[in-house]
Image (tube, rainbow, N blue to C red):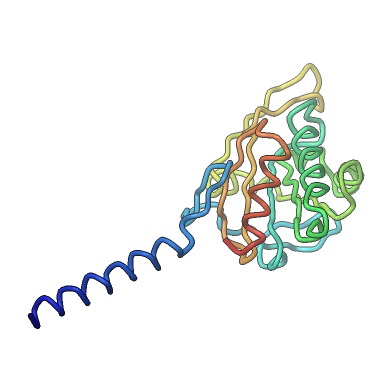
Amino acid sequence: MKTLLVSRRLAVLMAAVVALGACSPGKPSFRSIDITGADYARDFKWADHNGQLRSIADFRGKVVVIFFGFVQCPDVCPTAMAELAEVKGLLGADADKLQGLFVTLDPERDTPQVLKAYMANFDPAFLALRPSAEQLPELAKHFRIFFKKNEGKTAGSYTLDHTAGSYVFDLQGRVRLYTRPGMGAPALAEDVKVLLKGA
């Protein structure tokens, strides 16, 4: 009888543990690719278009979205930045908790003045970062991005093929997501909202 009572108590205790487990939050669901815990794309140290050296720690408390491109890009880059501005609008009262960063892969033509004017087309709070030409190979390796210069008819008319996705960092400055190009502002906004809740 005593053994039966202990077994019943154990069964009740196990049921309670299972019930508590069911109530605890699971892994968050994202529309972007979840790369939480990645050992790449962790930090950077590049000057912004105002000449201030920046790292991910400067944006602690905000969700940061980083896109790599170049100002003379005809379609993908302006589309990505316009979508990011749209995402900010979709966040409503939390709009100021999103930081957009545009990292140029073309420091030769993208001077600080050019980058500042370019950012003004999208959102005044967005920043452009300008690594040096010497930093680009290490940047590409660390962020696992591709870019290739395609020579034009004149020295300054070249274009760049480049990776078109973005990295998303959480409120603590940890890389969490990789967005696919063309996923749209509403989907990214939903992911940002999840991160803003501390997921």
